[in-house]
Amino acid sequence: MAIGGISHHLSSIVLWAVLPQILTSFVLKSFYTLLPQIQPRLPPNASADQIAHENSRAQRHHRFARIGLILAYLGYTLSSVYIEQGTLFSQNFYTLLGLTREQVEVGGSSFVKSHFRRLARSLHPDKVGKQGEPLFIAIKQAALVLENEGSLKWAYERFGMDALAWQPKPATQREAVFRGAQSTVGFYVVALVSIYMISWFRRSERVNNYWRYLFLLTTAALEFHIILRTSLGLSFTHPFLSLLLPNRLPYEQIQFLRQLFISGSMALSHLTPLISTASMLEASLEGSSIEERLTAQAYKDTEAIRPLIQDLTMVLKGLEQESRMLRWGELRPLLGEGMGDERFEGVLEDVREKTEDLIKCLKVKVGEGTKEAWKDAVQRGAEKHMVEEEVRRKRDVKVKEKEKEVPVKQEQEKPIKVEVTSVAMPSSSNGKMELTTTGAATSLKKPALHPDVFGSKPLSPDDEAAIIARARLLSPPPEA
Image (cartoon, rainbow, N blue to C red; front, side, top):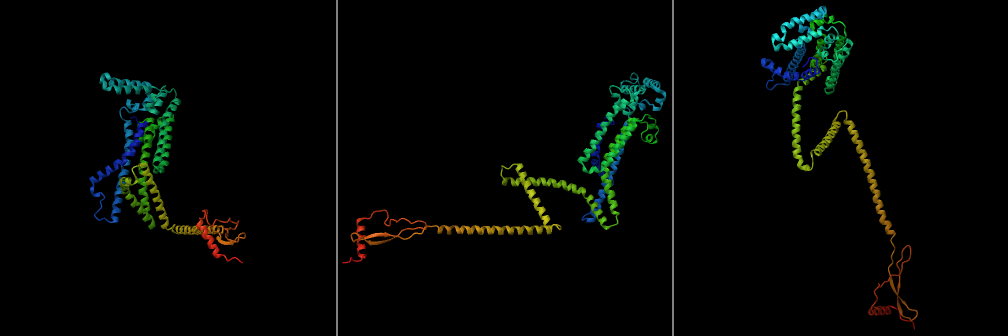
């Protein structure tokens, strides 16, 4: 994997995200194995103060181990880049040929050719065998590049082995800078996207964005300064660069700066929560007021039991899943076989929402700041309900009164009937008494017709004779 490549940087980010968390527990266990007397232990029937003290010790040990591991890994990543640059086939061409830049600048291409011929006589594959062929090819390529006093050597010193693969070869330094800037921009685009993605998925990392952007801007400024300067003499004679990166070309310095940015940014993500928490607790405990001390101690206790809370959260999630499965097994026969999982989830969601509403109402009812408002709202609701009940009662009374008036009006509109009486009237023609029907059924509006008192059935001779005889007996005797 090439130093400074995109794949190398991505693998470094992944290792930074995974290794510190995995190795911290391993380091603590190894440390407690070597020194068991310093491991925090709770005695039987421990008091609350003892539990808080031991939890604080465990948290402090974990924090120190994490900080030490992160700093050690930071040093390892930076030193690995420097060491890898010094390996045989990763060395720059000056180191590979055993020359310094000052010797090449003074001696020129002829000095490089003569030096290569001396090396070829001792390192040629005909003398050392085929195992020396890769080294001989690398030396020959280095000599060809350093012999070139034009833009090829200038581009190699600033952009490394990538400049040798450019087609066509750059003819001027301006063209070399333009071609190299295209590959350089890719690194900074990936860096910006990585910072944005980390901030998006982990909101707690946003507090470090200022320093990340500052480091990235500083790295870009240093890189472009190294690329665009006309003389390389300052890079070898500058005290700081000579002490930090001796005998390193500009492209190797750029590789180191990029790795420093990546490792520093990832170390910042791990160290900021640890250092800020410890410093905040110490500063708070040194406060003058008792309230600040109690608040700091409470925060410290919270930080101490944070791992326990995380473990309990995982256990509760598992228990919630198990209880959900048990509820589903118990309620499924009652809900019917036709109910699917989606409908069951809908029922549970509805019950959950109603339960949450009930809990919110109860909190409002018993809260210190909302108790009076709840009573006022209930009283206004009761008064409104009483008014509505009174209006409803009056409306029902009016309806009943109207229902009573309807039969009375119907009774008044019925026709008045008069009984039919039968009287015997004397006949004016033959002096005999005849039965005359008087009376009628009248109404308020128009007179009724005389009813047939005897019905529609004709009288028999016997009934007719009996009626005539009775009429004679009841009638007065005729005058003489």
